[in-house]
Image (cartoon, rainbow, N blue to C red):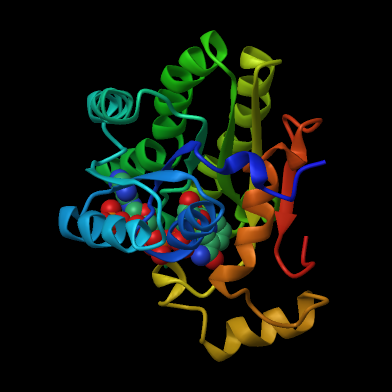
Length: 252
Ligand SMILES: NC(=O)c1ccc[n+]([C@@H]2O[C@H](COP(=O)([O-])OP(=O)(O)OC[C@H]3O[C@@H](n4cnc5c(N)ncnc54)[C@H](OP(=O)(O)O)[C@@H]3O)[C@@H](O)[C@H]2O)c1
């Protein structure tokens, strides 16, 4: 039996949102396990510097600036990755965003569409294009980063919660569509300290809620997502597809 994550060595992983927060730690974990990384995010400079950091770990990395909310840009990203590396073995659909709304009517149509484009449409577009090629080749693993907002139906982020609910359904439907050669799973994250949560995570009211509602009584540190992500990316989860794992300190 090989060492944990051994099968990731020499593989190619495309990680969206790989320049900051959870995606950066997931991509770093994959690089440390020996996978080459396609670093996808909007900020081109951040993609370049992150790719160089991963290369310093001894793997190859490609900076691939992209807005994953665009249907056509997702297709261009896939072509760029296959042209450069000739394969994608792991897709981590991590890029996501949400405004925190005081009043739900504060959101306009463009804002609503952006939430669904970035959180849901990107996953559909990237996963279908890549899973077809994975299924025609040596197979692969797709991991979607969802949120406990979907299960808790969190009110101030209602459109985001609905979008992440769609991510959970897509995860199961894509697992059925592309099995057995492609496995598709999701992690529903609870609150982690990243740029996405900076506006509320240290608010006393939120911290009080975390103390009261979660067995672990604290928010997550981004490195604490890496073990679960490597589990799904690698053969450690070879009999798992369509699963949705909660990593949230025990709240939901
Ligand atoms: N942090 C949490 O507590 C938490 C909880 C539940 C779920 N999640 C989920 O976890 C994932 C990562 O969140 P995070 O907290 O790590 O966020 P973050 O710190 O804000 O990082 C987001 C990453 O995604 C990229 N990104 C954002 N919009 C993009 C777009 N349109 N196209 C391409 N890349 C884009 C960002 O780079 P650019 O700005 O350069 O594009 C950045 O690399 C998201 O799906 C989020 O919904 C997070």
